[in-house]
Length: 90
Image 1 (tube, rainbow, N blue to C red):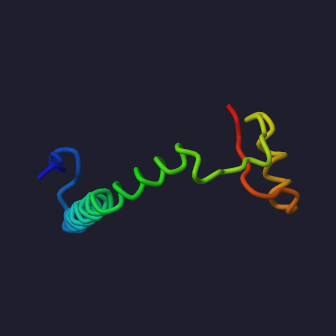
Image 2: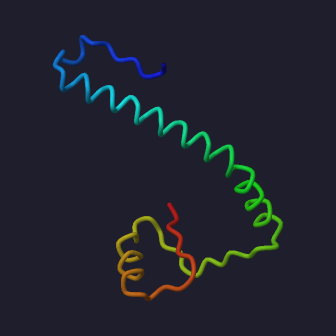
């Protein structure tokens, strides 16, 4: 298994071992879900970016804010002063 934790790092109580065991199982389930999602969705995502890159789909960016203006961008979004896509530029 990929998640092996030394017992010397954690106290040996039933509670911590049980919690660690559940965490390991949930982590493995998460990894399996992500792997399944990527194998199923990745071709669709690649196709979407190909269509966008070819110019068939046009994505308009109506507002651009510098990263230093992120607070103002948030205020404008909350105040519904923006339309379409808004981009923060670093």
